[in-house]
Length: 566
Image 1: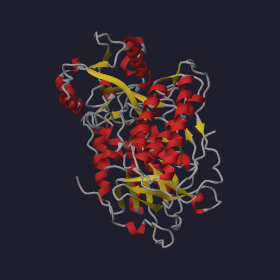
Image 2: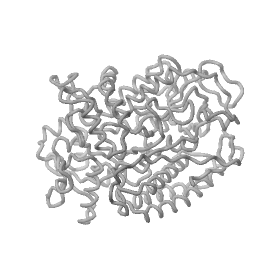
Image 3: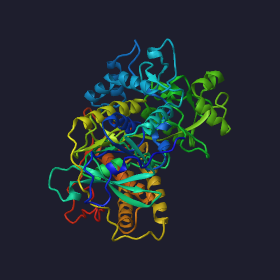
């Protein structure tokens, strides 16, 4: 792996302590190094400096874990209308049609852009653009461009290599954003504006203030708020929590997509069995070999993910099972090795020969369908703040994301976000206040963080999972409130660490999820309530607005008091 460049051009993009600010062009700071963040960075870099922050290694973004592919309306049997219709059907009545149409209209262009970057998609000489297209649940036709069963990794490796090679992109590995620097930190009464970000250099254990022409949140979702998830350890809702604390609205946080088929194995808790395997004919079965999906939906295994996940959950509870089985043996070993080499190899290493044995699978938290309210240029409620990808609510996913629309959204809106930043006036560099550690000390023990982390993820799994009740949600909210008090107190008195910051963000997201779920008094898409099992004839997105901040809240780079949702 090529070394990550940490220092070139830093003098022109950073100021640590206030007054001696370079007057050269300020950088755009992109928080997150997945597909959304790298798309923005590459589209910006020819016109000015970009700093990309990754809180772990650059290779650990959720993009690299995506197996299925990216939607492209490319075939002669396909159309924008068909893609929009499938997106709306999956989204259960809450998809914004304008957003869905805009992204569908730009889907072919997005795939072509990735091809031009050098992404090695699986080929088919007879297919559109010479690509092999597959089909996934909820799609009417084959329209998924893929790189075998490791599409995300193939895309991420190509874009990351291009970012490393670009002279205007500075990659900062193991840097975690803490909070956004906004007008209130500067004591300005202007409409809210973002001027940079506070970031923890994890290895050096120091916090720096990074001024920026604009900040782009591309931090992914909040899957780690649940005990079982297909997401990497980076998915702790950082961008959603930071934007909320900065005064941005969040939308549709109750809609957490549980992927139906996560591998059930003691040595591998986060390995995804791609939906494309069901698209090619794999069947879900009970231990006695009975296929159960046709009894739940006419589309059987190709029903949208929320329906399949609930069906599996129902069968597991009905029969007292720890998991169900995904049987692909009838597809044959040559086919499985060609189309699903990663899954075949990983399962074989764990003692499961998928050509001869069914795969044990269980639903797991997979995708956050809500997030920071943003438009088709990635603009959030605070000026000079943008959000792209899984951290956002754009209206595309509604109450349930259609398979493979996520990578598409990252590319399409990542490019429009960069376009808007380039067309906007670049402000002069502004001196920002340094991070205040004058009233904190080193933590005397870490057990509080570890205990609260485990408790939060377990209560979210048990009380705010695939099937919900009002009583469970209320109990969860009560426990979350107690946890927030403990975490806020710890945060106010001790120096920050990555574990503390991630826990702080997760508990913020957990509260947003639960409060959003309590507002929705119906069952729709990914949100199923036993107390409100019917779907209302008309429904709207759930949008939460943060109340005005307390007058006594510190403006010195560290919030001493946290105003809660009322």
